[in-house]
Amino acid sequence: MHEVGITTNLIEIAETHAREAGFTRILSINVDIGDMSGVIPEAVEFCFEAVSNETMAKGATLVINRIAGRMKCEECQHAFPADNLTFECPECGSFILTTLQGNELRITEMEIE
Image (cartoon, rainbow, N blue to C red):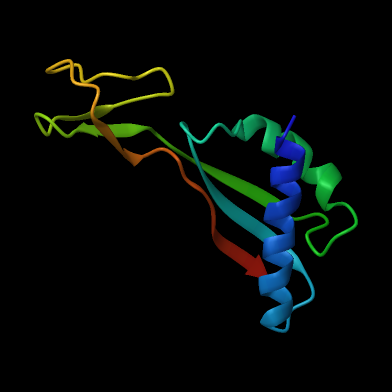
């Protein structure tokens, strides 16, 4: 389960920014996780308490914002909802697609003290 490593990295990034700003405690972390990122939000949520236990984020709240997948066809310019199983444009059948959103994995906000 690679979500343990991902959750650990999210906390490390949050701690680095909190320390650089002169704070000692993280109260909450808001994270965007795209549906096409390969990261399972429920697994990150499950790992968070155990991984944060000996960190500045002990007792912090994790808020996960799921970002739906969306692609655009480069042939016909059609934009459409997508997931990890989408390989062709539903409009024209082209395989030349660009991901518009859904690969996100980022901290968007933190509450620190």
